[in-house]
Length: 166
Image (cartoon, rainbow, N blue to C red; front, side, top):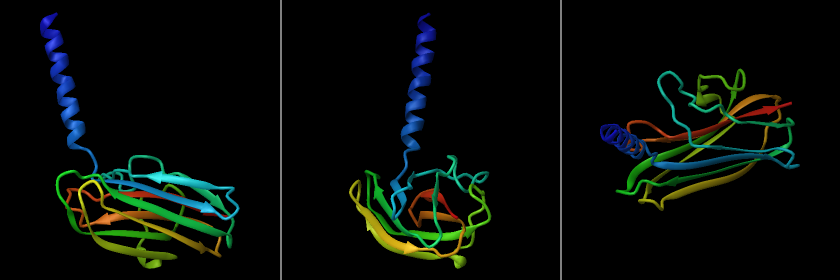
């Protein structure tokens, strides 16, 4: 019995150490809303793997009308406690895609809108955000994504959602 408790405690400690080691460097909140506020959808940070470049969680879907005013908003916040993350690029874009939920990230050279920030994120306090109003006249399905580049990590960070315009 005593040995069983020791094994359970050892496994619990290993789980907690693994969870702490896997903590993400950024907290991300990405929101798209329609002018009529009939739709407001928020996505949060996700993790990509070689098998799932679009992340482990299903992407939320925002529905709106083509030509309707939309608001794109994101906050990209460092929660890395140890050091500054220098020269990190935060890229945002909206790009047409074949269907909602597709695994491939479409090429950014077809983006409806895009931009980026390059900055040094201070430990636990570095933050960048954007609020942009826009209209997309053409009906279709679009990927809305914000991601890091050069984040000084073994992987990059992102949040994404699908936008379906009818």
